[in-house]
Image (cartoon, rainbow, N blue to C red; front, side, top):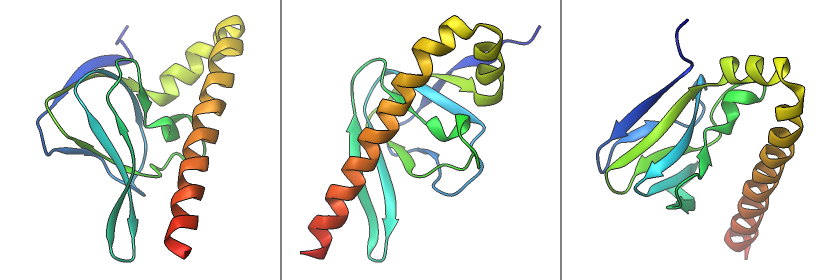
Length: 126
């Protein structure tokens, strides 16, 4: 059986998630710092900087249409657990008790990022 995760390493300055591209993987930050950004009319707009071990990024790999909603750029050397979204989804379906713990946490993360985007949008309109 092929494992559905691997350890991934990224160098400072490397963009490893690209906004609007197909989202096969999600990532759990092991070490380093990552800037999440979205494209605006004038360039990239940073929406969040992740630095805490265990931070999740690339959640779009679990949600249709499975396209990344932001880009991720390494601000330092990054080590992350890379997980194939479809494999994780299948795993959680086969273990509903784990899914009951995981999906609410994912929903909370998505809601938090949406609130950050809303705040940034309001700031740009003022």
